[in-house]
Length: 326
Ligand code: BTX
Image (cartoon, rainbow, N blue to C red; front, side, top):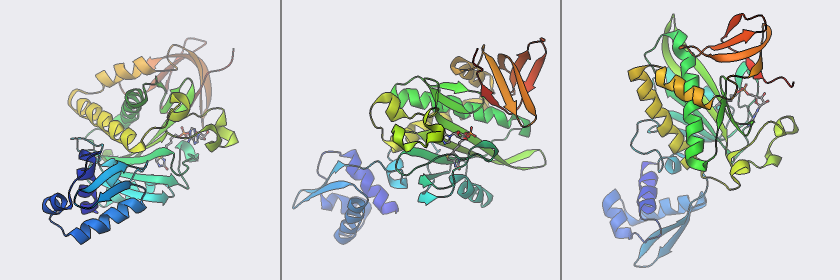
């Protein structure tokens, strides 16, 4: 697998040009037969690679895959995404990431799947994750922060996801507290933050990110067709999912380092600048009931402040937000 990855890197770096078999075999220290075997494998996965006698190999087109080889072309110099576990189809990437974290996987390890058959949202809800369309990723973080600050990470990831969407697709993305990323009011991405903790110390945070990239409206079930959208629907073109992942990981890592060094202050400002529900009249619905009022802002802890009609301010830790129709 390492060799296939290295081979793909060589071909990508010289995109459109031939790389000789000799050069590859010298650099990767392997036989011509081994190279041929890996070229065949890449072709079987959908890469178009030209092979010409005496000239060598040339990468012509690459498929929209989220395999470790393909994603590693886009992860840059950061440490997030250096360790990638890829599965073509899984129940949920969260489950795999949880067990990897328990086995001691390093911070920044990610789990990716082309398809999830039991993708999950918050509160036991389902997250539709059809094959070949979106980014279904779990990222392992090991922040040295107190347990009660963990919700800040969801907001941090939301900021990073909206920045990534702006970078890759040039689309304006807004954040609906706490974890929805919207484009023109429709849900494009969701974040699920799960903890492994002992007493009040965090062992690992498993951040699940689902982002709709290349879906067309017909990919969404009737249930969500009115409320969901994708980068492709809004941007009227398709995007390379591996590139989206690379940009996303770099945005997350940059903000995360800033956060660990300087605290939540900067993230809070960035979050507020993108907030969809602040300053609006909203209804916060949770298992314990619902409160309607004016969304005043978020606290240093990432808690939503909601002022009801009697002027009483409520701290909302977890809820779904609705904008009531007037
Ligand atoms: P959530 O509970 O905020 O959102 C779930 C709700 O969103 C569903 O009840 C449905 O109405 C709607 N929905 C379901 N699928 C989609 C979709 N593809 N696009 C838009 N709306 C949808 C949000 O939870 C957190 C989602 C995290 C998903 C990631 S994917 C990688 C990781 N693995 C895993 O199982 N979950 C996370």
